Image (cartoon, rainbow, N blue to C red; front, side, top):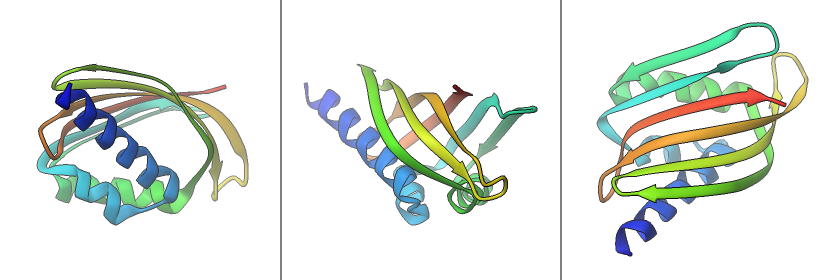
Length: 127
């Protein structure tokens, strides 16, 4: 039971920081040598980012926070099988580059420790 509470809290903090554009808050959640990956498709091409260690993926997080603004966030489901959690969520994502907002479905596969994210993989698909 305590593990589920930890996972729920960390996913809530992760999503709150992401929706709020809080780079420092995002970085605090990850283990120093954690793994970060995003896989998906934009309107015209696939996107894949993979980095290991906060020093390598902090610039990617900074770019995400700077370029994309999220709104109308909804957590659709959360499955916890400690130490892993899977979150399915939806948000409207506004690109400051294109000026377009796109409704997007996302799935996060997260491996957790008691206080940090060890591995994070995000899949997304515009709707």
